[in-house]
Image (cartoon, rainbow, N blue to C red; front, side, top):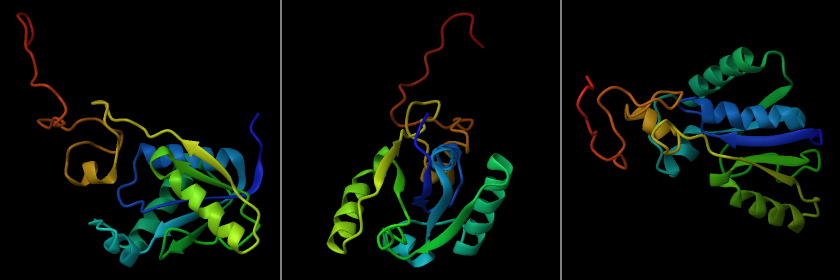
Length: 173
């Protein structure tokens, strides 16, 4: 059984909530008694070049609805992120950071920043990226462009640029 931490942190933009977000939060709720979820502010997301479908307030409402539906009555709080790190940097209370493979390098940076101010390092827990049915990662960008749905299914008439042209053999419709 995995260690249960008092407080863990995780984060994201959570624009188009998908099964990858659910996997990230599932791990955070599995290993933490309380989860602090950092959500990128509209300005922070824009400064990182993200084109959002939902403003901060709508993303928070959608996130809360998904958490209630997927996880029920769990202990969490949401923190607005105006930079890469929120409360996880400055407080010993946060014992672990749950990241995706894509963002795990931020864990090392987080611990370097914590060390500079005399805060003990957080355990970095990494979650694999969830892949769509075409083998590419599921992302809000792919959902926004209409390439895939929130479960990673290719939408009709859309193929990944990595996919070879479909091969139809005799007997197929």
